Length: 90
Image (cartoon, rainbow, N blue to C red; front, side, top):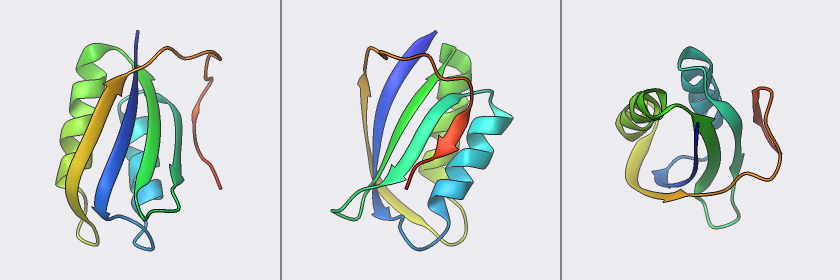
């Protein structure tokens, strides 16, 4: 299992991006969370196998018809607590 911190920049708040990320995570069996940041970006903590994470990131970059993803910052991280599911944080 691999754990990533992903910061998504662009038009990603107020357009359903967190729920788009949730759907992608469920489709790819990714656990973790997604939340809006004060600077207009979205932060994601994603845990899964490498192939699942690659598909997740590929589709995050594409976005949906309401979003415009400009940049992803991706870093490997160590997760202190095991996630049972993927959730939207508020």
